Length: 161
Ligand SMILES: [Zn+2]
Image (tube, rainbow, N blue to C red):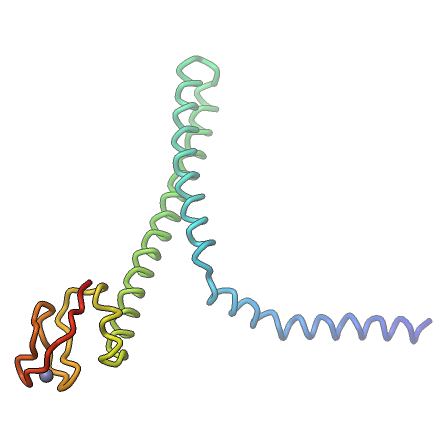
């Protein structure tokens, strides 16, 4: 029986050890991988929460006006609901700031991708930007409307469809 208890305990210790070693990794991984869907859902839920906070505060005011609440209860509940409303707005601000940041990151990624593309692939991203493009022969920068390269005279493919 003593041996069984010892092995049982050792097993638990080993399991805890593995968990202790792996937990920081799973935590780190989950903080990096944020799926767009869950972010959108969080944003939607938080804005719904904000609206419901306002409704709750409004209903509380109406209840108090109708004489259903004592002054003390009203003040306590109002302070609590208002604190909740403030926290929700702060969370929403944070989410919207993150959303804006994601938008900027996407623009940067597009710009980065664009510089990596070879000239034959430039037509594919032409509709993403109105900036100047480059000549397929000499690489000189040309206006999007230009039919011929001003530097080497290469006939330019029409980029805009
Ligand atoms: Zn050229």
